[in-house]
Length: 99
Image 1: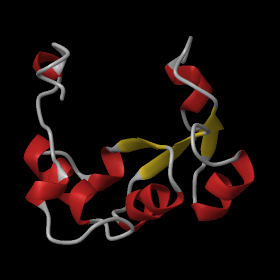
Image 2 (image 1 turned 90 degrees about the vertical axis):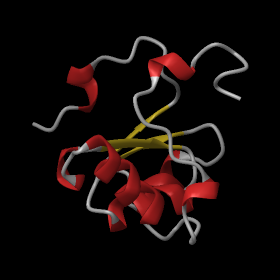
Image 3 (image 1 turned 45 degrees about the horizontal axis):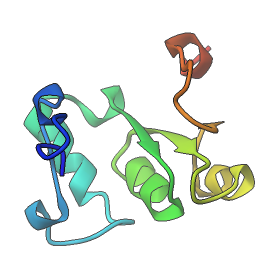
Image 4 (image 1 turned 60 degrees about the horizontal axis):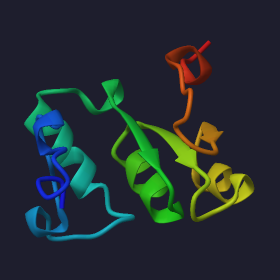
């Protein structure tokens, strides 16, 4: 899909369900992405719009930012999102950076 819309070139690493054995909330997909990027899980920030995605990110030891496209703020926070945003429009690092 990314290639079809001309966006693949913007991603150094792509991990799909075909690359892992277990689905979310298992952290395997995020752990594999961090490994392929050569990044420590604690240095990663995940943007997720699902409860199981937030849970997977947190289980991988990553920061989780919830996006309210499928679930509400309360559900995403209850799953472990430390910040919740409505969309990416005008998003700036300072709005999600740790204090």
